[in-house]
Amino acid sequence: MTRITENELVKIAHNEAYAFEKLYQFHYQNTFCFIQNRINNLDQCALLTKQVFIETLVEIKQYNFDYSFENNLYKVAIDKCDAYCEEHDQPRHVALDQKASEMILDHIGQVSNRPTMLMNLRHVFKQLSFSELQLLELRFFKKMTFLESAFLLKISERLVRLETYRLLSKVNVMMAL
Image 1 (cartoon, rainbow, N blue to C red):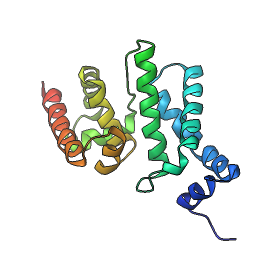
Image 2 (image 1 turned 180 degrees about the horizontal axis):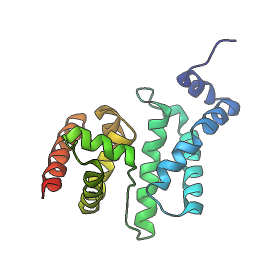
Image 3 (image 1 turned 90 degrees about the vertical axis):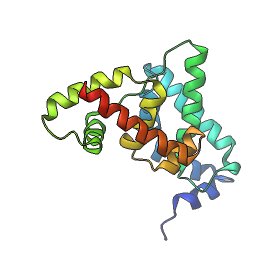
């Protein structure tokens, strides 16, 4: 038996439930964690994750093959999380882990006294807006390209690139204060 690519599995999922179930099983945990980084309520995370997969299944015939299935899921997840936060008057947030933080420090050239720099970076994160944190998360935590980030954020690749470099410069300046 030959190995089926994810895009082939998506095409099969247009008509066969077993194919979508395989995609669901493979991507559920990452999608749940992606949502959990935005919504701090486990029950609600589970519900939103299910809604993301249901909407993706309903819209599977309009699937964008230019991007991975995971990116398509994240795009729906961002919309669901934004709608949930608005509906429940909850602040939006993004969680960045230690590894992503270290990658940001490497990128802006902050290599000395790592523990202090990481602590300073956490303080800087608290001063950034949700959209700025989301941009850092997609680029450094999810390791997405500028094009993939643009797809998720529904803005141009050029704007994502400009905003990312502007933001990294801003973080570097804030770290120096």
